[in-house]
Image 1 (cartoon, rainbow, N blue to C red):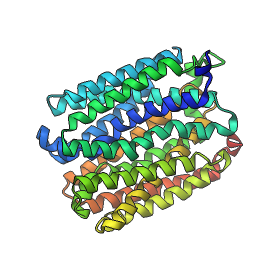
Image 2 (image 1 turned 180 degrees about the horizontal axis):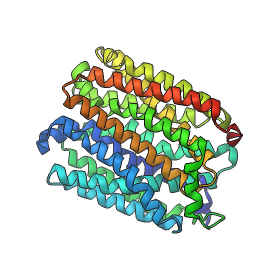
Image 3 (image 1 turned 90 degrees about the vertical axis):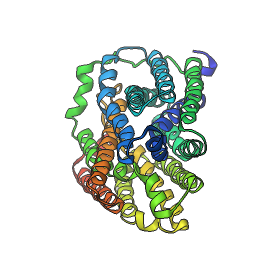
Image 4 (image 1 turned 30 degrees about the vertical axis):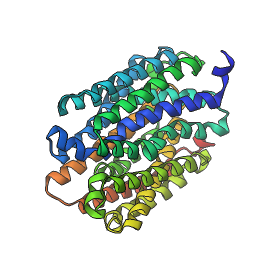
Length: 391
């Protein structure tokens, strides 16, 4: 291993660039729904499928792909997955219709969870125990920076010019990440050869199952509202492209700050901090559409929504990865997949509510109710989980 490969900050930086590109691909569509609807001649409610199909693809195909490749070298897989990512975004940039754009989203989704899982595994392996939560937050940090910078930039670029330029920009970042992985990522190999049957034992782990339940039944509420944030900003705040870009930046700034603050939480306090984050997030969503009606409070509530959402994510990721000691190779992939299952459920619910001719206010109330359920599940988890896992 050369000196460049041995540098932990450089490896983490490359992973952050990679997850920035992946995060931008996943979330940028929320700032372009109106453009997709007009250019591809589909209803706005239908464009929500671009997010739900992606999320469902991550949830379903991610674990399958990781199980098939569980004994493959980590670096080789990271290179292959980033190659798939670049190809999928080229397809998106050249998609002649909405159906082909959906296909590109599904292709990109297949590599999402395995890539995040592998990069988090490498990040943890090159970090001392007290820095592992921070390492996970660093990998996740690329995604949150994408939400802060990439999504509003993509929304502005698509609004001012053409949404296809957004995907070409993502291709460029993906190529940089692809080269960086080849040059800097260590040839990480687990001490023991991964055993799929043993790794699947994580689904018998009570602590892991409780966190999965929190994500699926609670965190899904986030995407019930988040999916349609851009049209809500147009309707309630009356924002044009510039205003929406600024609001999306505020959301992303909150996401970055929330992510890195949560990355400092020591393992034994994860559950308590998670309860606080979910409680605050539920309150934010109850008041969301009302606060959007005033420009100043619209920017503030977008910031708080981002901080609450992505201040919660590292806590849940860390709880799964730390608790699933029997699955060091699979736990990160499962964590990313479960989050995207929740994303798909949330996006589907939001679409269903709008298709039933309900208002965006109802969408946010349903979102807050689901997050409240997540809070109650976390309270139950705090009482019954094996706390020795986090010491």
